[in-house]
Length: 141
Image 1 (cartoon, rainbow, N blue to C red):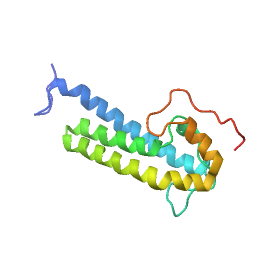
Image 2: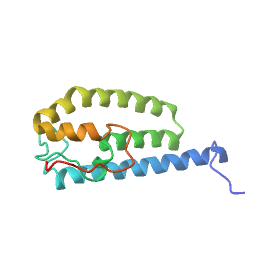
Image 3: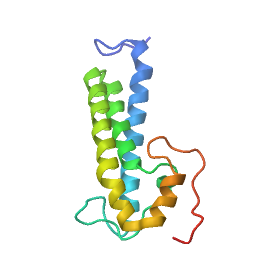
C-alpha cells in the first residue's frame, strides 16, 4: 500500500478529495457568475458598477446567490482539504454575514432597481439551496 504524508490516514483521503472538489467547483461557480454579470448584466457585482439588467441566466436560474454559494463551498472545501475545523467556523460566520448583507442591502436594492422583474425571479428561485430544474422566465422582463 502506498505511503501517505505523515499525519494523513487513508480514512481522511475521501474528505480531502471532497474538499478539492468543493474548492474547484466553488471557484468555477464564482468565475461563471462574474462572467455572467458582464455578458448578461452589462455590469459587475460591485455596487459602484452594478449591472444594467437583472442577471437571471446560467447558474442564476437555479439559485439567486451563486457567487456566495461558490465562495462558501470553497471555504468548506478548504476546511476539508486542510483538515482545519476553524475554517468551518469561518464559513458559518461568513454565511451569517453574507445572509444579512443580502437581506438588508442587496434584495432591497434589486427591488428598487428591477421591480416586478426581480420579484418574479425572487419568488421562483431559492436564495441559497439550488433548485434542480432551472427556472424559466414567464414574463418578457
